[in-house]
Image (cartoon, rainbow, N blue to C red; front, top):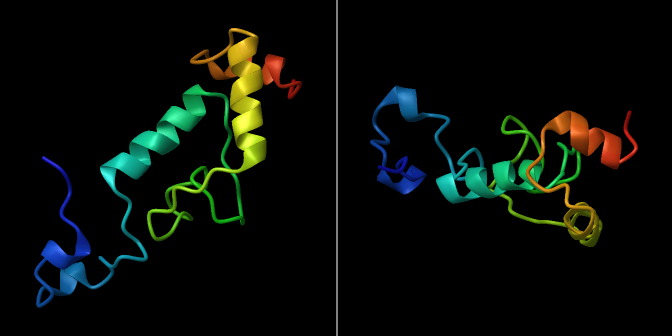
Length: 95
């Protein structure tokens, strides 16, 4: 079962006060975000993007940049998709 959308919650319940479209992250968006990690993408801070951390990403943003697509392509060509983070860090020159 998927999480209800902000339109589906009881608005009279004070516990749902912060359950807004701004703060909503769908299962699809979260899955795409986690898939981004397996494709070699790190968290991004500040720039609205799919790869922002869950506490920062708003409006279920699923934006991916050309640079992120290039990173995924490079990891794919090197056979490094879906590897442990340490291996990806080595590949991306982060260690």
